[in-house]
Structures are given as structure tokens and as C-alpha cells.
Image (cartoon, rainbow, N blue to C red; front, side, top):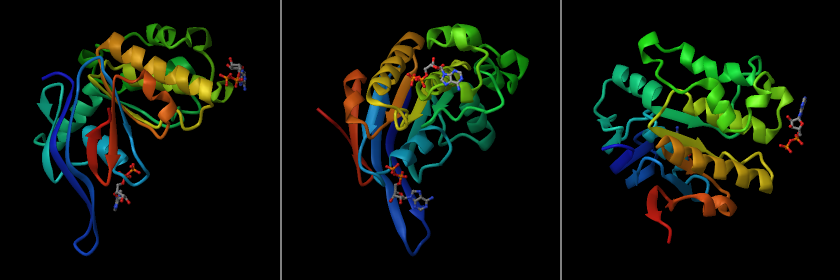
Amino acid sequence: RPGLHMEGVCLQHGDGTETVQALDNVDLVVRPGELAAIVGPSGAGKSSLLAVAGGLARPDRGTVTVAGIDITAASARTRAKLRREHIGFVFQSGNLVPALTALDQLRLPLRFRPRRERSGRSALALLEDVGMADKADRYPHQMSGGERQRVGIARALVTGPSVLLVDEPTAALDRARSHDIVRLLAREARQHHVAAVMVTHDHDVLEHCDTVYEMIDGRLAALG
Ligand code: ADP
Ligand code: ADP
């Protein structure tokens, strides 16, 4: 089962006295090459969904499979390996390391893998892909917001992940730049056969996504 599969996923936050049902019986399938968007009000459970899909939080119930591997049943060690090899994260404003050039941002995740696992894509080819090859030696403070986000996307893809988890990628961008970035995400997902899930408040960019879901009070529903 390639891609991302979530079935009957429930997650509760808090202790016995005050609990919040952050995820309430969530089913979600994202196929390789697909960009799925999740919209919904603040507090709806969108971050919780990304955390569970990324193996950062273990659900109370349900299963999550990434690239055919059930991460809910996996040991901490296997989950860490799965995150490293099969999951890429893209954050709000790129989350780049200030002291590294664009090219070194991409080399960094490769450096933390054993040599035999370095089967990811070439860093420079990916910078080319996202239109940043001519700015490979720039530091984050020399990049615009859109450029930082492009590098963040390239960095998430450099290890060759099966699943890409994207948190509010356009939060810091103007309208035109937002469209560019989500178009780029859709294209990269297709080109690299990655199952991409993007959480967003930005209804403007949904037109570039293959599927759209709405999350309310921990429940996920497809939007027509
Ligand atoms: P969203 O990303 O859509 O804003 P979240 O997944 O962050 O939603 O939060 C879902 C619900 O879970 C909210 O009611 C939030 O207050 C609650 N929540 C999130 N994280 C925690 C936590 N660590 N402890 C307690 N409650 C939490
Ligand atoms: P955008 O139109 O993408 O928001 P900006 O208007 O911020 O970009 O920047 C325009 C160009 O100037 C970009 O190509 C960017 O690389 C470059 N640039 C922005 N800030 C700096 C900087 N501090 N040093 C060098 N080049 C910069």
C-alpha cells in the first residue's frame, strides 16, 4: 500500500480531568503523486493529524501506514527510521538553518544518514527543480520569503520521502507567492510520486490541490 493511509484514527489530548478529542475516527488516503489539502478552523485538529501522520504522536486508536509500514505498531526505533527515510516535513516559514547556504540546507539531512541509506535525490538537482539553483550559495537572510519556502520544500524532498507533510506553507507569503508555492508543491508531489498533505487556512490556493478535506472538531470530511 504505497502512500499514506489513516484508518479510524483517534487521538485525545490532556489528562483524565480535561480531555480534548483532537482526532475523532479519522480516515484518510493520500496516493503517491497526490496533493491533499486540509482546511478548518484553529483548534480543529489539523496539527494533531500531521503529528500522527508523521509518527510524532501515537494515536489512541486506529492505524497509520506510510509506504506500507504500520507506524502505529512500530517500535520507537522503527518509527525514527521511517521518519528519516519516508517522511518529509515542510514548515510555515521554511525553518531553515540561518548559518547554512541553500545547498547546505539540503546536504544536512543527507549527512545524518548511514552511507547505505543515501539514496536520496541530488541536492543541486532539487534546487534546480524549485528554481533556486542560481542561488545555491545564498544564506536564508539573503532570500525572500518565497525563496526560503522553496528551499524548505527541496530540503524535505532530498531524502526521497514517500510522504510529505506540509504545515501552513503560505502563512508568511503574499497572494501571488502563495499560488506559486502551492503550484510548486503539487508539481513536486506529482513528479516525485510523493503523497503530500498540506494543512492551510488559505482557501485561495485550494484550486491547485487534487483533493480537499475539511476538519472540524477532530472530524475529517471530503469537501466537494
Ligand atoms: P489545529 O492545528 O487545527 O489548530 P490542533 O491539532 O493543534 O488543531 O489542536 C486540536 C485540539 O487539541 C485543540 O482543542 C487543542 O487545544 C488541543 N491540543 C492540541 N495539543 C494539545 C496538547 N499538547 N495538550 C492538550 N491539548 C492539546
Ligand atoms: P520576492 O519577490 O520573492 O518576495 P524579494 O522582493 O524579497 O522577493 O526579493 C527580490 C530578489 O532580491 C530575490 O531574488 C532575492 O533573492 C533578492 N534578495 C532579497 N533579499 C536579499 C538580501 N538580503 N540579500 C541579497 N538578495 C536579496
